[in-house]
Figure (cartoon, rainbow, N blue to C red):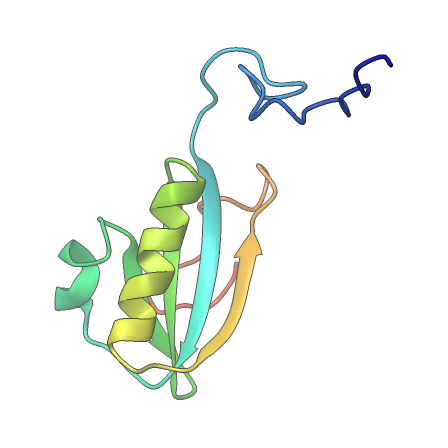
Length: 104
């Protein structure tokens, strides 16, 4: 009797990520939550820009990687704020949010 064939990847996680090569620049995100936080919260949100618009808080800026993004989302959860949206910005959109939270 021969040993059963293992499925690809069944031995554990791959040693690298498919299609990934070298370090990438941080992705820019816009995260909207219900309620208004003051700009002094920026330090708590790892340097993201904090602005408000129409009763919402907008956190925007570069996020180094997925674990950092999840860390920001955990902080939002811990504050008991309702998440409205998380949007990864295209390179052309990054930096187009003004301090007042409106787009140019």
